[in-house]
Image 1 (tube, rainbow, N blue to C red):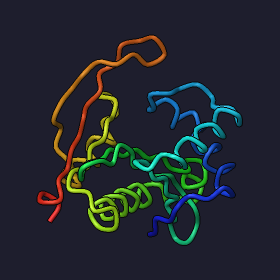
Image 2: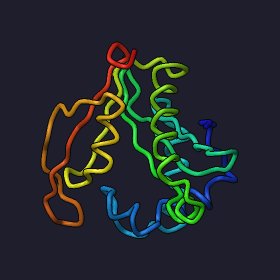
Image 3: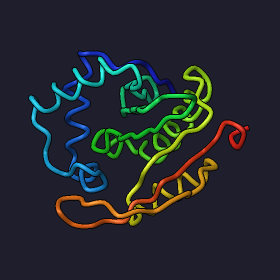
Image 4: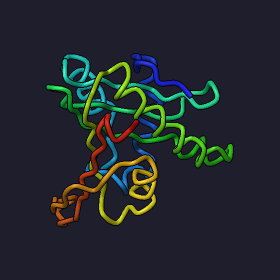
Length: 165
């Protein structure tokens, strides 16, 4: 289970994974993302010193994306998505979810040197909230955010390097 920096040749797969209907349904941006919008996002994150994008490899195969953002003063936020179609077909989806979370947390507190890692998840996404709790994240705040014009409850989760030991 490896995280490696995302490359230009990963963009097509990243877009395909991100546009999967189940990924979009649990995201804050739910519309189908077009190639132009995706290219603009890629250019923006590559030039942002507080953001890093990694590809998660499961069993040697690219299988997901982890994005760290707002990395300032030892803290940062993260988000991720997986290749639901490919992993679902291979039967490796659950193992990949766990592997990605483990790799992302280790990378945040290891090579990235963060002391606090935060994330946001829609309150009704209980499977992801449960996974975060399994890895020691605590739910520190709730707020409402419009998603497709509809107010949705969002849960902010947090893990510190001290809690991760």
